[in-house]
Image 1 (tube, helix red, strand yellow):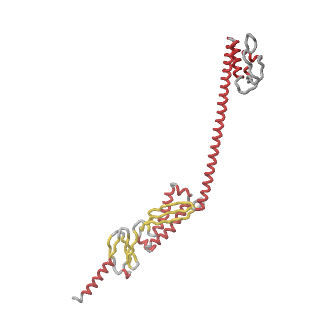
Image 2 (image 1 turned 90 degrees about the vertical axis):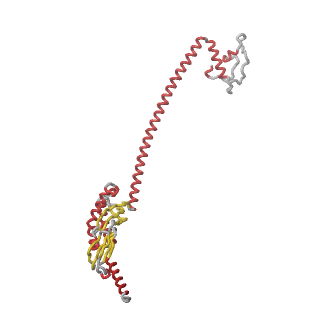
Image 3 (image 1 turned 30 degrees about the vertical axis):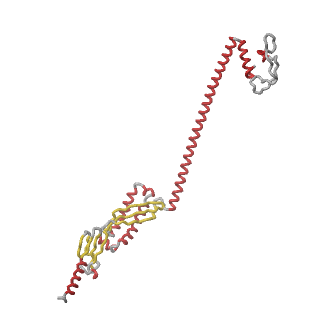
Length: 312
């Protein structure tokens, strides 16, 4: 019995190894391609535990796991030419999945890197064709969705030949190249400067109109004020003359006396004006004694102020 224990242990190990080599597990994110001597025997797409022939090291049965998820491939800084002849830089990406594992294995040996290299070439060509039929503004307008659908539809036949399904194509960025960006900036700058000059010219024209209207209104207001002032001054002079005339008619002697007193106040106000008059002058007639006929008060000195012209 003791001699049989090593043999039993070896047999158990061999059986466990055969069982281990015959089992493979497929999870929800994977697909399994079962290969027998390099030929595809079956494809397992549902998650679970599966069996195969053992001895994979003899190329009896091999299992190749491939992705069963939606994958993303980015393509950056693609230089495309639009219908106007200018060049732009475009960033895009593809969302795809492996829809036919058999074709995928046959076309690219189940290599995602090799499949994406082929997608890169086809996506680049599709972007150039779609942008070449439109201007730059199309990628920034409602046509952007149509452009992405066109690129997707152009990629699908080539992707099907690789065992892939194109789920979606998205354009992430459409930007100016450095030289086009500088040209666009200069053009926009010139347009803004021209617009500023037009606005400035319209502003100056409006300012001139407002200034001319204000000047005209000032002249009209001043002229009207002067007219009214002249009318009022004339009416005042007329009223004054009427008052003077009425006062003169009522008492001519008193009116003469009042006018003389006013003239004395103006002439003798001490402002430093020099005048030379005789005490017998008619100007001092109200200073004389009516009984004697000579001056009733001392005559003013020789340095007396001169009377005003309207005080005579």
